[in-house]
Length: 82
Image 1: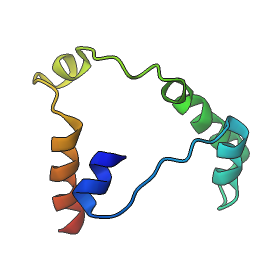
Image 2: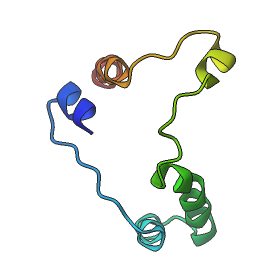
Image 3: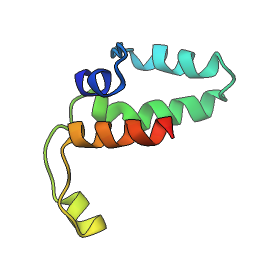
């Protein structure tokens, strides 16, 4: 969140939620329960830290080296404000 906060100039924080809380946050605004549960399942590996390793996925999918998240955040913020 530090990278996004610095890039946007706004305080952005991560609030960890248990799967049931996450589903409730999605269904409150109108998501269907089944869709919310599917989304909770899809992000479960990230919540458990399973996406913290570096792999060659960007190279294989896009044919280029991955870029640093800080660089991505800075570039993305320019797009969000255009």
